[in-house]
Image (cartoon, rainbow, N blue to C red; front, side):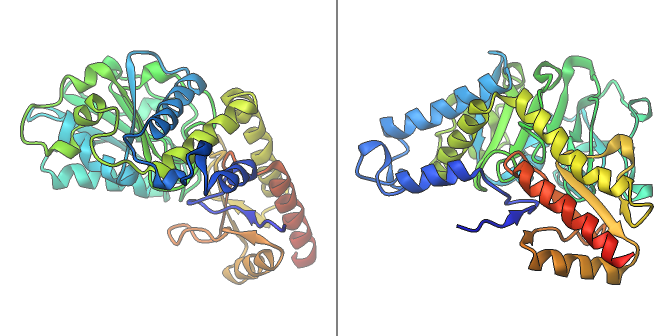
Amino acid sequence: MKRAYNFNAGPSALPLEVLQQAQEELLNYNETGMSVMELSHRSNEFENVHNEAQSLLKQLLNIPDTYEVLFLQGGASLQFSMIPMNFLNDEQIGNYVLTGVWSEKALKEAKILGRSTAIAASSKETNYDRIPDLSELNLTPDDGYLHITSSNTIFGTQWREFPRVKGDLLIADMSSDILSKPLPIENFAMLYAGAQKNLGPSGVTVVIIRKDLLATVPSHQIPTVLRYDTHSKNNSLYNTPPTFSIYMLNKVLQWVKDRGGVAEIAKTNELKAALIYDVIDESNGFYKGHAVKNSRSLMNITFNLQSEDLSKKFLSEAKEAGFVGLNGHRSVGGCRASTYNAVPYEACKALQQFMLNFKQENQ
């Protein structure tokens, strides 16, 4: 079976072993005579899948007992609204670091709700080619939280060091890099991530939230299904969850565990990204990285060629060679290789060789 070299930004590559196991179990999960998609979300069989996924995530990220793991719907984009809705009162400010499109959208949703907001720092003036230095952050005593986007899919930047905030009221959208490296969970009030990059297929959003934060949710004015405490009290089963997505999340988490956990995955991610960044750095300007070196993402590698015509030729020939998803976002143009956990080292090695050959033939 021929598999594409899948560098899509999301939905993205899934581990082949996980897909094969899901295929084997698709019609008869755990001798139930039903697909996991047909199981009641109230059944013991699905409850075991659900709880095991929570447990695996806690193990892999060393999540303390002081945090809840929730499985929600609506993608990371719904969290943009739920966060200020649940955690900002009239006296507090939602403070945002702008590092790309998704952080802009998060700020926009807080403003739509009429909440007080501020911009702690921004790299918009240089087309989001860097992460602001920690010394640039403008924090205030009235901040209800500081919101960041840990890795920026479109622009190819990533936080290397996280800010420390009073009360550890740091909230991070980690859709692009969760589970790609160990995390100092205790530094965060909340982490959230759409699953469709490193965790599984689209449909489920993982929220890791400190329990004491749940106690601050106002008792009125927030619709029931948009309250984090609703989902906490009901083990994320207040309404019908995305059962198949949670099942696949469980399988991916087990795959990470079988490979030595997040620390081992992180080592492989470093090696994968280095294959491509080394070609860019040693190309004498034939390939031009968008992100400055100390802000480069290990998950989303963005680069341009010397002209738009050359970029089009590169992408056309790459597609013919079996590479998928290398088109850059319109905000940056050029090319983007998303090297998430499930993208094999061999795919990155093949892309490295293709880039070297293309340069030799076109310089």
